[in-house]
Figure (cartoon, helix red, strand yellow):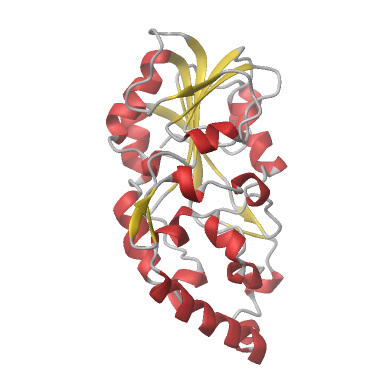
Length: 269
C-alpha cells in the first residue's frame, strides 16, 4: 500500500490515484484477520505501516495508521493517521507495542530500512507478504498475463530474506480460500470472471501498473475462454479445491508468541 506506481494515461500514478474506491474491493477477510489479530495479541498500541484503508487492524488496540498516500489515509476510519513512508517513521524508539505491515513491503523503496524502522519503533513486528520463490503459480499469470511474473519477481523480496531482515522467529502459511473477500491479485483463483471487472483491476496495483495494450488483449482471451468453456475444462480440478497455497505468509518477530499461537502452524524460517 506504499509507493506503488502505475502507467495511467502514459504518466506515473501513485495510490493517490489508483487508491480511489479501494475499500469496496479490498474488504478485509475474517480468516486472514484472525491470523493477524492472533499475532498481535496483547499489543495495546500498534502502528500500521502502509496502512491503506486500515484493513486487519486489531479492534482492541490503539492503532496509528501510517501511509504516504493521502487518498488512502482519507479512507482510513481511525483517528490517528500520519502521512509518511515506511523508511522514515516519525516516532521515537519503542513507541509502540507492535508494528504491522500487510501486503505493503513490496512497495517500499528501501525494504531493509523500512523493516529496521519497524523494529526501532516497536517491540513486536508482524508482516504479511508473498514469497516469489513459491512454486505454485496463479493460472492468470501462467496463461494470460506473464508480464505479472516479471513485475512481481522484481518487486517482491524472497521470503527468506524478509524473515532474516526482520529477525522473524515464526512463519505462518495462509492458503487462499476460494471466497476470499480481500481482492488482492490471487483472491479470485476460483472466480475467473472477477478479473474482467475494471473495479477489481483498479484496486490491484499489478493490474494498474500494466499498460492497457497488455491487459485488454489478455482479458479478451480470458473472456473468450470463459464463454467457450475452455477455461473450465482446463481447470476442472482446481474448481474442486476449497483453498490453495500460493505462497502468502505471515512473519512474526520480537517476543515469542504464546504456546497456543505456536500450535496454529508456526515454524522457524
